[in-house]
Image 1 (cartoon, rainbow, N blue to C red):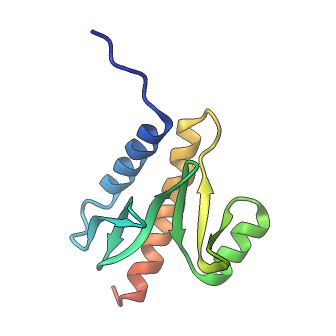
Image 2: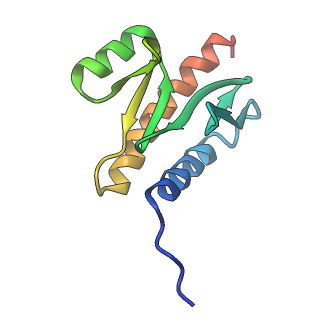
Length: 121
């Protein structure tokens, strides 16, 4: 019996699970949800979660978010009419899972460090 092909959403979850393993040594990191999407928390605060359209959404300092959007590396995150000042979305690299994993790993590492620092960790 052959397995059905993975959907892009499945691949996103696999990448998120890989990111979660990176933080397995930190007891403050746990799985969580944001807007019913799977994500990662540190100290009870979400620092990264999967967004629609194969994007990893992360929380970073406001100036870093502006820089990432201005460079084209990330997209702004808008909730209703409000653009979130510390949240940006990193889209998956088309047809390149290793490049997506590298991009998301870097974004998650940065978000983790930032959110952990906000909690005094």
